[in-house]
Structures are given as C-alpha cells and as structure tokens.
Image (cartoon, rainbow, N blue to C red; front, side, top):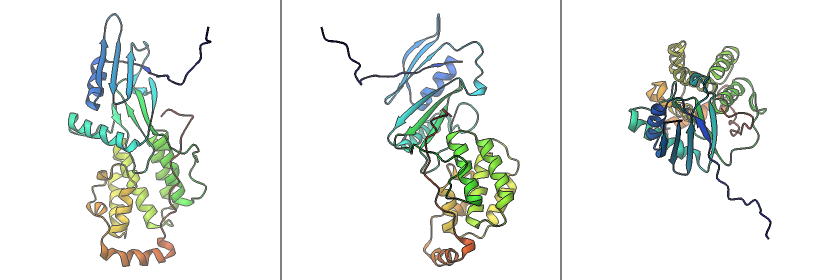
Length: 282
C-alpha cells in the first residue's frame, strides 16, 4: 500500500464573519463578486467568487463591532496589484457613482508605485491585495537614506500604506512640516502639503485643509514640479489645483533645470520601495 503524501495542490478559502447579509452582498456584488451560495437559516453562510478569489462568510460572534474594523482579514497575493485596484474603483463608480474612499465599506487609496491596497467590507473585514514581488524588508521610521522632511514623508507612507493608519500619518506630517518646513526644499514642502490634504480628505477632517491648499498654491513651483507632486498621490483630484495636473511643458525645462542647479531647490532623494509588513494585516 502506498503511503499517503502531502502534495502542493491546496486551495485555502477564508471564512469571514458577516454582520449583515444584505450589506455584504450589496458591497461585494458592487465590486463584481458573484454569489455561489447563500444561506441565512438556521445560520449564515455565503460563498462569493470573483476572478480567482473565493470568500466565504459565516455567522458572526455576538460581540462583533464592525466599526472597529478588526473582524477578520485575508491576504490576496497578485502579480500586478494596480490592475486590481483599477478594476474595483471602476466597479464602485459604476455601482455607486463614486469610489467609496471613506468610512465603511471602502477601498483604500492607491499611490502610483505602491505594492498593496485594502478593501474594508461592511462587517469590518479587510481584504489586503499585495503584489507578489513586494520587497521583504520594510524600513520603519523612514528610509535611513533620507533626512528631514523627506524622511518624515517616507515614515508617513509606511503608516498610511502598510498600517492603514492615516491618522498617525497625518500627525507625523503636521509635526514634520512645523519642524522642517522652513528649511526643506519647496518640492518636499509641496509633497507634504499635498499628502496632508489627501489624508485629511480621506479622514473627513477638514481642519487645516484650506490653509494647506493656500500654501501649496503659493509655492513657487513649475508645472513640471507640480506634476511631480500629483504623481506621488493616490487621489490627486482632492487637491483641486488644476495646475498640478498639467503634464510637464517644454517651456518649463529651462526653469526646472535652473532650479535643479540650486542646492535649495534640489528635490528629495527617491523614496525607497514599499516593503512588506509581515506583522500586520492592515
């Protein structure tokens, strides 16, 4: 008799708590998921499928509080994470007329070049889509190669993208701007102000936004530099600054070159690649 062997042909399907059948179905079907199975009595059991993703949902514990957003989590490893975010945002716009970027349910913002994003469902579950080639190491506290406001920006990126902690990211940037804003290169100041506007908008916390927007508008940046600022954001439309969306113009090149020759105008070093956070699921 041949001894049984474990073979690498497994399929893992998470079973997440479902606080509301109706809200869960509405949200996931808006994303494009199909309903493979639905049962509400004598207990809840749902099976939802989209592309190669299968999610099952069951009766929640009695003390579940969706507002805490700690009900459950699932990591989804993919080859090209940006395509998944684009597909979900397209589907949400089609279903709701907008992208659900605040509150619950929502999809987190996606900065160009990022390696992950999170979908938070009505029950407080998190689906974290991660690019497979995401670097294995992550420099918490900002890259060691950066200093000043550039380092603060990188630190805020870690909090926002890998911890889903926009509130801490906003506090870090506010403090960093007070400390380094008067001496930092204008491009770093612009990136900080733009990120503050983006975070505050996502948090539905308008305090400071008008002042940050005025300061950003007043900065002496070329169209090329303003375009650089919007490229670092995940939702550049929150700035409401049409010049920032203008692609680099030929006439800007001499001015940009002159600024690059000045030490005060040197742009910050490039951000380090986003890394994996193996200790967190948010």
